[in-house]
Structure formats: structure tokens, C-alpha cells
Length: 67
Image (cartoon, rainbow, N blue to C red; front, side, top):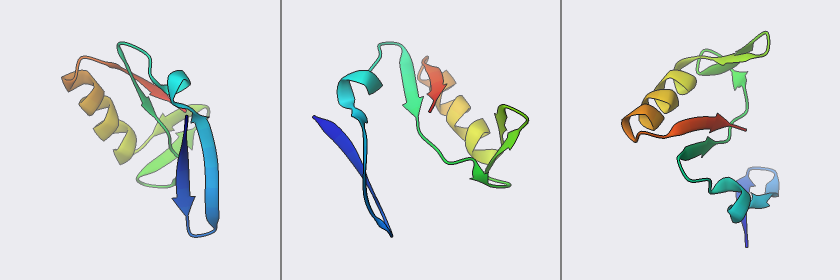
């Protein structure tokens, strides 16, 4: 079984669900090209989306895993 993302340009396939489900972690997929919401500072993600999702993971007692 796999997840698919639908965009304005068509359908993109993603990783199988089994690789996204890891106990104790929250897998977060993003495109870091939308400042100020999300962007790269060198090789580190930054921005509003990063802060929000890291807080969601913290409140759920999960480790955020950005892909």
C-alpha cells in the first residue's frame, strides 16, 4: 500500500506506508521553498511550519522526522 499526493500538476507517488509508520515518531513531508512558512537555513529547516509541526510532535510526545 502506498500514499499518493495530488497536486495541480497530477499525481505523485510516495513512500509505502510501512516506511512512514515508525513507533515514537511523526513523519512530516514538506517542500522548503515557501518562506516565511518553510525554508532552508544552510542545511537546517526553518520557518513557521517547522515551529508548528515540531510543537505538534512535542505535544504528542513524538520525535519529528522531516522528509
